[in-house]
Image 1 (tube, rainbow, N blue to C red):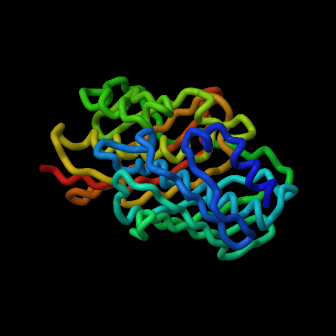
Image 2 (cartoon, helix red, strand yellow; image 1 turned 180 degrees about the horizontal axis):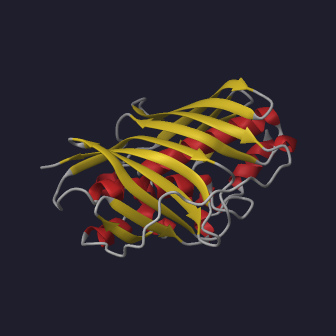
Length: 282
């Protein structure tokens, strides 16, 4: 148990989030996250990437606890999160539970609630144990474009505390497409030196949302992420990463964007996902 806890807590990204373990066993893990402005959107709402990060960390902690260190390296092969309501200026607790353990895959479920019990998010995460393997076949990203138009919304998004702490830069945001780069920085690192999965989830979530925003007129609209679905094909690389997103479907106020995350060093895709986003036009 201590080895699993120490491996996760040694990550700079974990330190940047400010979470803490309150329970750790082979069957269940609990994480507590006090409210911090650095993890919030405007109005003190918890950033969706923070909730996704807690889900990924909780699932990984369960896998590490029940499969032991020698089964590593570990990474989140698949994650589906549904956002049920907002945490506004509140601490939250993430409870991860083991559903089934296989030889290579660990199936977990994670529920995130406020300290008074209000449901915030529900997640299903599949953690893969590499059993010593550190390489995987790679494919080029499917979503690429060369636009460099951003518009007036980009500086406002980049200034949000959690987004700014990750160093996210909106390179393009127009015509239902978005591209956001995330530079290498200590606060985004995992223990092994690569980008932390939580930072990748936050990047993917934000880029998918920006593709949706790039399809509507500017204005004061209500918006949120109801769901996020992600597959990581391998552990995130070291160095800077870039996310490319394009809007693939819209049904009135609901938007679906496909997102690819690639390494800046070689342009190879390492994560893909779909962001379901809602924008209620005023």
